[in-house]
Amino acid sequence: MLQVSRLKVYFPDNDFTAVDGIDFDIHDGEILALVGESGSGKSLTALSILGLQPVTAELSGEIKFDDLDLCTKPYPAGVRGKRISLIAQDPLSALNPMYSIYGQLSEAVKIYQALGERETYKLCFEYLEKVGIPDPERCLKAYPHEISGGMRQRVMIAMAIINEPDLLIADEPTTALDVTVQAVILQLLKSLGKTILFITHDLGVVAEIADRVLVMKNGKIVEAGTVYDIFEKPSEDYTKHLLGAVPSL
Ligand SMILES: Nc1ncnc2c1ncn2[C@@H]1O[C@H](COP(=O)(O)OP(=O)(O)OP(=O)(O)O)[C@@H](O)[C@H]1O
Ligand SMILES: [Mg+2]
Image (cartoon, rainbow, N blue to C red):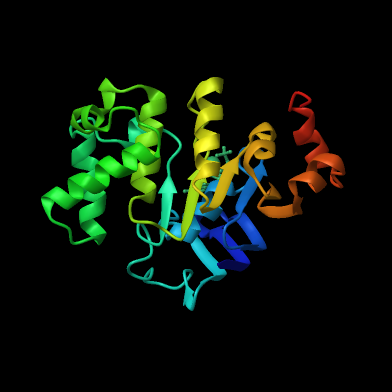
């Protein structure tokens, strides 16, 4: 589905290479976890796939998505938000407090689908149901501050999948949530059956959700394998160190 080759993210201003020539593939239907300590380059990798890297960054290498190269400028039309979408870390800051949930969800639909008002409403309702919101009608009328953190994250997920993207990128989607809500949202993401690049620094979360794992350190991928490989026989001291931070399962 997506092939990343020799991807580099370089900041010429301070001569800093944040992502240092990484290679990986994302296969159709899998949940691939990208883990690593803070500053290892996870978010920049994700942002590069979406063409949202900082303007001061220089990209090189190749990100192949079908017959497109997402590293080329300008970023290909009709990919971001449609074929590849992002679930942001903090749903409260990602949602606009001035607009109702319907206002924002319907906006996401209108960008890529030419539907009438009634169909748009139906679609929004349907996707809120799909992400487990008990009373979609009430939720659509509400403003972000009127619903709980877990509900807001569900809304974010609905927004990310409403245009049926081929690939979902989730950058720490549950970090802002408390542990019980976190578990429910992880189950929901898993049950969608989507291809997901899942970014986290929490290996406990990885065990619950991922098929394969990439371990990143200082801009490089230092270890890659199935969840079983990584948990049962981590080859890198760094991975063992990350595992050490997880209570035993
Ligand atoms: N706009 C920028 N200019 C210069 N350096 C940057 C910029 N954005 C990020 N960096 C640096 O690039 C490195 C990787 O950042 P990135 O955000 O990808 O880390 P991360 O792995 O997502 O960390 P975290 O777990 O804290 O989110 C960091 O050292 C960061 O300071
Ligand atoms: Mg990050």
